[in-house]
Image (cartoon, rainbow, N blue to C red):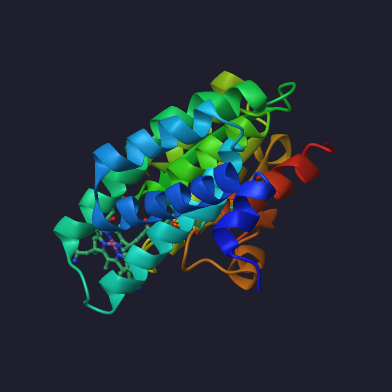
Length: 230
Ligand code: B12
């Protein structure tokens, strides 16, 4: 068999292999909560040919999924989790403007909110970033958002899509309450409502009268684009 190093050199594959190695390190940096390394690898990747969206979907999100799995298995605890979230956030701060730049034309205005009672925002932030990259104007309302605030913003800002996120089974009913408040305010026909977050399913989305669901941030863009006919 040919010497792999020689083969790599001859075919000029070194940069690709190095890039893959570095990006594996990005995954590791988020897992270990090493914000400095996560940021510097992201910076380097963005200065090359790397697609910003692939950094999110192939490295950062899988890393958060893995740390989430470890947390559930009691293999790590809240401090580790928060360090990972911070490392991911630092990388996202660099990626977000690039996602924005790559967006073509504005497809519509979207509200993104974690529902009342729920403070989880990592998934919601990812969805917001990827929607922005996908060509939407995003109004991020933050976490623990009251249904009345959502209604107010729909009315004031001429919003077309409402994205609701929940991570707790105990806050999933707040998605239904939010939809009911939108209905009661007479603005239900104005907006497409998408729901998501780890415990949410298509079945639940149908039950509460949401218009769309996806289990991923990238999927959220596809559903949102379909909603505006793009
Ligand atoms: C990180 C985390 C925390 C962090 C949150 C930090 C932050 N800034 O968000 C901290 C430590 C603060 C926390 C607190 C709590 N947490 Co917590 N947390 C998690 C953990 C480990 C990961 C969540 C996460 O960020 N995942 C990564 C992101 C990227 O995934 P995601 O949010 O699902 O989003 C993806 C998709 O779902 C989708 N998506 C998300 N939103 C939307 C919306 C739309 C419209 C669409 C289309 C798609 C979409 O896109 C994203 C990217 O692909 C989960 C366990 C797990 N494995 O999920 C527990 C978990 C959610 N937490 C849990 C609990 C119980 C709590 C606490 C009550 C703990 C406590 N006793 O205090 C508190 C609640 C605080 C509150 N009121 O909200 C439980 C919930 C159990 C349940 N049945 O409800 C879990 C499942 C852990 C467990 N197994 O016990 N938590």
